[in-house]
Structures are given as C-alpha cells and as structure tokens.
Image 1 (tube, rainbow, N blue to C red):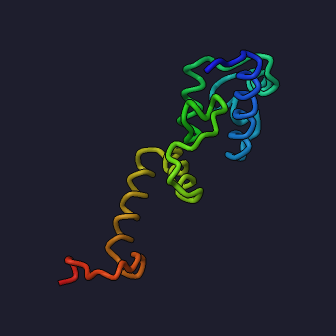
Image 2: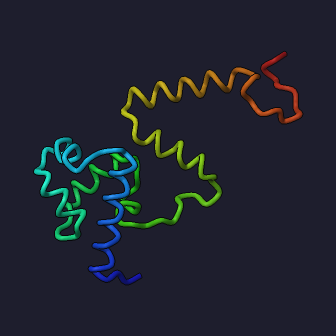
Length: 128
C-alpha cells in the first residue's frame, strides 16, 4: 500500500485534533501534559510539522488509541465488536494500571451477580 506524504500528514493532523477534542483538552493543556510549547501542538494540528514517533506513541497510549489510529487508519481492530464495545476498550486503554484494576474488579463483581448477567437459558453450575 502506497502512502503519499501529504495525505499521511493530513490524516495524522486530523487524528491529533480529533483525539484531543475527544479528551476535552485545549492545545495548551496537551502541550503542558507533553511538556512542550503550545506552538508545537498547534504546528502539528496545522500540518506544518509532525510529532516524532516516540511522541506519537506516547499520545496513542494517552488517548487509548492504536498507532494505526494515530496515523488516521479507521479500520476497526475487530470487525465483530459493536461500537459500544470498542468505546469500552478505548476507555479501558486510557486508564492507568490502578484504574484498569478497578474496572476489572467491577466487571468481575457484575459477572457474579445474576441481576447483570444475560440469561442464556442454561442453569449456572455455580448456583448449585
């Protein structure tokens, strides 16, 4: 697959703006988080320059996105996932280790509560 540099630059520029907006951050807030000048973030979003690969990776982790998504790739990771499932995955990816553990513990608690588990029509072997 051949990419034209200008097309790739436009895709990255769009992704950077979109993901920052989704997070509800200003350019200044993002620059502060990255310990960069606000003009650097503005330059990326205007397509005048591009972030270095390690910065792009850092942003992908922060936003809970894949590197492919940072490059403007919109193909879903797994086509069998619904949009709400992908949303949960992205939220999970944006959490730190403590937040991820809390989320996993919460999910585990829900699984063991019959009020929240789908009724499959089969009896639960644990219920016996």
